[in-house]
Image (cartoon, helix red, strand yellow):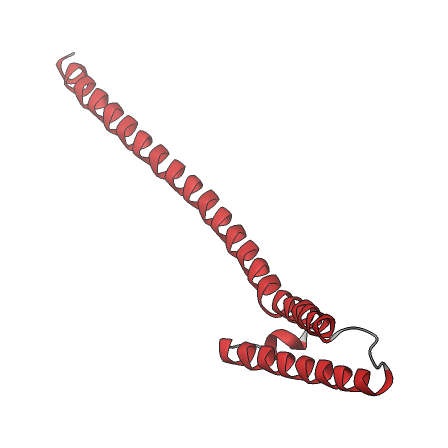
Length: 125
């Protein structure tokens, strides 16, 4: 299963894989329906076989869509959400640090002003 993502690395390859799955599935279903004419004469009406064809094709294609498209997309979405959470935490830390640096700079300026105001008093004494 590890080789599957490398094989289906582009959207064109996924479309080709899905097309081949549909083609092979429909071919096998048609062979099955052809065999039923030989071995299962009049076991089900023709409409029922059309329904079987549709149901089997839908089941196989739905499974293929899930495996080839939806599951990787969901995994990628989970990874992107994890990265977004990490970026939000980083932003929160950096913004907090910047605010603290601003507070310290203001405090530093206030202390320098106090020190500068206190120096002339010392020189007069």
